[in-house]
Image (cartoon, rainbow, N blue to C red; front, side, top):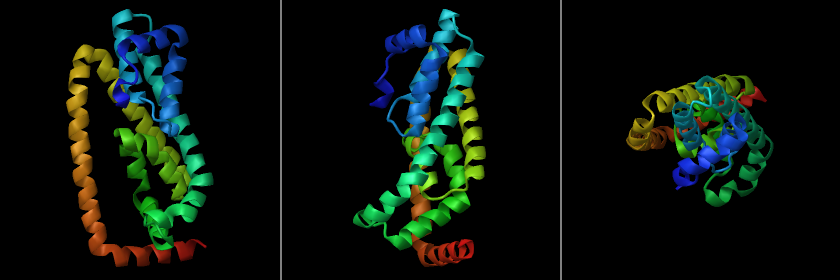
Length: 214
């Protein structure tokens, strides 16, 4: 649904009136947790730049990269400041008791960088990954490195891809997203199976790590 929130005419109108700031703010708001189609804006801006000749593709990619980095850092801060309290207060209602919350912090401590980096390429994780990283206390330095790297790589792939392949990129973007979503689903299932088999050990490791950090 979000991919159709802004059509090409609306994107062209936004770009004509607000230029690179439109790209920056839409991508930043999505990255901070607002369900906006940042990727659609980026691809649409790249195609608009190629067809109109009024925008520079390098600046389009730079605006999207900056929006991704800034928005993710806002989401991370919100998750760190408010997410923990919400999870501690209401988590038990959705099966996230204190033990599971400790485990979540441990898993993000070990693999949170990869989640932040690759999450940039999946719509739902693009909205939630930074807040989850903050709520699960992924170290700020590690978050910034993976967040910045993921934001830049994502902006380059979809920005330059949309620019050089123009309308053809729109046709393959859907299948690419489907393949990635399928891969994510398989990966999550495998992680779930691994977790269920090793849950007790992972919880012991989480408790040991957190006790050392206190």
